[in-house]
Amino acid sequence: MNIEHPLGDPEAEPAAPDGRASRWQSHREERRRELIKSARRAVHTLGSDASMEEIAAAAGTSKSVFYRYFGDKAGLQQAVGEVVLSQMQRRMQEAVQTAQTPREGLLAMVSAYLQMAETSPNVYTFVTRYPAAEQDGGATTIATAGALGHFFDSIADMIARPMRTHLGAGKESVIGYWPTAAIGLVRNAGERWLASPESPAKPDHEAMARQITAWLCVGIAPELADAQEPVQ
Image (cartoon, rainbow, N blue to C red; front, side, top):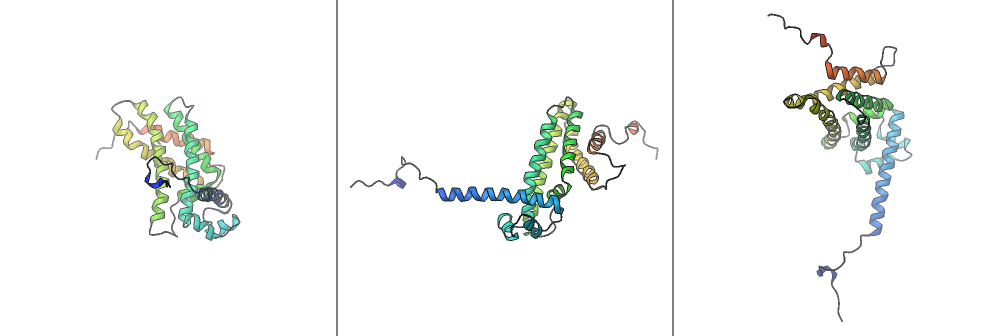
């Protein structure tokens, strides 16, 4: 009798994957996406300080389910953040496509950023705030910070590219510092604007975007640019 030994035969066809395992993995991934959507809706309604128990109750399940899929609250923040920040990045990329000048591109990106953050300040705060509790030796905090850092690094690169073209050769040392400074200004001014209570004096997102873009391009007081330093 001729008995074949597929494991020892380099020409043998590879074994087919376990269909049940594949279906289970697909089910877990779908369930994880559903939990992320539910958490996002819960935070939008309940606020950025919503507890895991409150988020789970709003999702119609138990917090043990969330812990099973995300580890802890920081893990959930990271998972929601990856989705939200990816959507923000795509929206900003789309916004800059029709810009004719670097300044128009900056305005389009800043406006898109503020508009999406304004859509749900609770969710924005939830995914951009480092967790203060429920950490596992700091590992989850580092992971969350990494996802956030990747987002702002990507945005910094987006705004640097047109500026390199605009300023030309010889300005690389300026461009090397400017995107990081620009991101700090946009983020801090934007978050201060988000946190400000509604009032007649508070600008809408378009006016705020124009103001931030002006600060980035010409500074807060361009008339002081040629002023001489006082004699000591």
